[in-house]
Image (cartoon, rainbow, N blue to C red; front, side):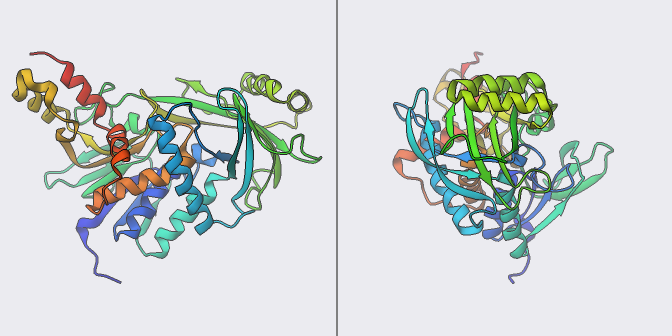
Length: 391
């Protein structure tokens, strides 16, 4: 094994899809990662979803999100085939799309925790992963030498490194807004609660394949990795999309919203969901996802608001001509967050982009895709606000 290089040591905060994908992407490039999470094991947040869908985001005309999803679906599918056996974390399927993008599309049903585990195991096998569990981070501080310190709420230093990636979903807002000059204008992140309704599948499935409209109905999913928390064979409907809600409590109202959405797709399945709610056999899962103001992820180096303000004052009336790439950054601080309900699709592609940028090894994106990196830049909100200021 090559001699350890202390300059290639990084803290990763958050052990979900985003954080585990970053750990693997950096480990492949020789970085040593310390993964820190408040939970006692990986995938305890939104990445603990019992089953999710990997599928295209189809639009009438290409959008940044639909283009990102096209790249991400292919990338994640390749990772599934490389690392996770079918039946033990995922299975191929088709989905019948109703609503604004009707049609039948190739898709996959995935238990996200299987990918999380596989990526962390890959980094561990490379000898470049250390995990700190049950370790909530209260603040990120920077010492005089430029190292970043992950500090607990009691003031104890948990770990330190020259670089840190915050991949903690909405926890990124809690951790960063109000520190290092960052505010909600610079990092406009929003919580989005999602609740899934599900149950053991003990009869024949009520549909041949998944159906999607306002939510996704999965008529059947079998996975040896589901027990003991969930039935090995289950059906599922969801998830709800509750903007601004930041709690994980299961609610009867959310189950009913799932039933109402399902009624528009398959009335017999909605009836079964309501019957399960009545007889007490209905199961539920709820967690908080994170979305940005423009619904696109934040991937890259975090802006330095004070230095950006000085840069714009220097530019004066020409501040509107300062390009995004010239935004000053907080050295060594990076974000991979706000994946919304597309974590399965986007986590690994975004992690690869970030790791290559951090490592200085990024092969230039195709001309038609270079604007996607700009669309994901965490500095975009602070930069736009600074350009609009006068004086």
